[in-house]
Image 1: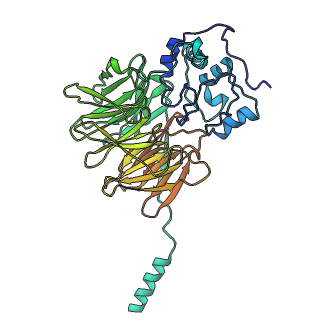
Image 2: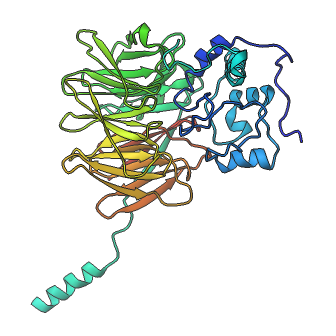
Image 3: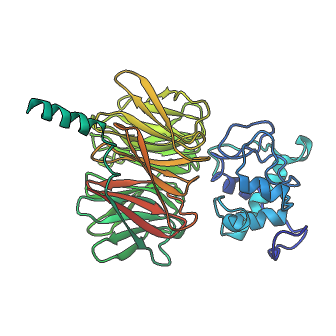
Length: 133
Length: 320
């Protein structure tokens, strides 16, 4: 079920800069982890987020709006839906934040999230340093 | 006559509590290019300063006229917290430029003290002054620090338990405490050594987000995850906790006014909440705008200011 409007103009197959994306992710570091199994932060763990149905990570208590977005409206996190969400979270799932208005920031960070979730043999060290710039 | 007197006293004691506090609410819309107010600070002269986080500006509202002036804070600025310092400056924690920033209230001169390069991006959150004129600040990515404006010396420490340091406040005696949202605790900083001592709230994983002191130096805590407001008494080391009313409260900001009344923002109810510790009663003031998203509260005697980041306006609750 198509639940979102126009998909943003992000050329299919194109990729950003995951190294830069890791630096952008520092704004989220206090809220989310990309390390598998690391829970207990104010936001859900984002390891493996691409392909995940919204609001279904067992270890996190989502808002009703997020749960409904996944279970009733069929929202699954893809590069496109994540891009739309990060551009205007309130429009996609009300009550969420923050906003990343810069498209390069969003694309690079999504690339970083994808890389961080890849099998270890396929990526450089994905554990973010809290203090990398 | 004495019987009449005692009868009258008995009747008065049995009467229901007095009507809710008289609070007058007024809102001030903000201009384009100066919206999304994150934090607010009101000086003794009544002028209100706020951080226009998405536009990288410091806003100045004159409530008498409703006029807003916007002061650019530079390329990459994303100001989070603001306080009015004892030195006559507006002090800003700029999470975009990773700097502590001072704006002179008279000249509008902007001065920056960047975090040391070696520390990387710390996601600066809020700041407060101690009684020695030094600025203490928090960085969500797991640090707290101190700037001495006179010498320019800046020190940064790793926070116990890593990421999380959020709201910070000073007590009337000059002690400094901060809350750690991701770390689920409150900490007191030793102002000489810089060591932070963890103080555990009674509710596990409560999400302590902001702190404020009352006139007796007791620390009030807004708990984002649990929807509680809690109070820590340093003299006894004891805690007391109250759950905000309603379904699914989310307590974001906390402030204690000059009458020791506690004010909170509840994102679950989209409301400001007034709590009287003496009667232990809550009173809600729902916003008339959806998704008001009040992230911080500050005031001066008779005024409690709430920046509605979701409604691009500042709202004042005038108390009697």
